[in-house]
Length: 259
Image 1 (tube, rainbow, N blue to C red):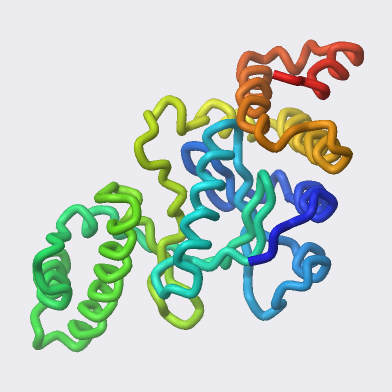
Image 2: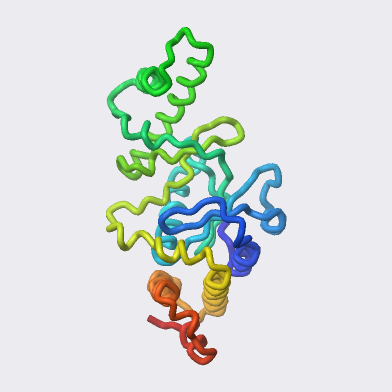
């Protein structure tokens, strides 16, 4: 995994197409990764990538957790690979999103994966072994069960474990594994900020603030240990609407926030 420099991360932030959001969660928004970023970072052009933008405190924590998990299990067959990461963005392989949330809730970690898959296909699709596509369906669910079980070993049994996707080679992987274990829902989610990012002006303000932080990090003007505190302040400024009324002088004060 490539660790982005402040300059590289600013390039990624500047390239994010605000109007091309593929998906969003409680605290992050997902965008196509433009070819210019792939080329600039020296990534494999044969792979399709997405950019995960952390929004506020929740997004910062979830991105950090996802990178931590990837570094612990890098090379495994049940996680979507992270190819590059900075303070606020992750660049991950794009997958074909599949919904296994309901199936994940039925997983008994003591039973046989193949048998569990057969039972689900029998029930959900009213199919039998006599049907032409039966084995193909069962194979898919057996692979999904493998990924769900592996992820549960990391984060425990959560509904997020059913958020799986298919890679180009047909492997089932978790694409959202930034679940913050042991943290209350209110402090790990930044839903309001994620929703505000639909507004182009708000999006631009947020991106510019992140780039300012990166400049301050590069110039040793900001301590990395203060980032989460700054994200809390920035999130509050945006969700309260105060960012729309900030004067240039006040903007300088926000940009030099010291805690």
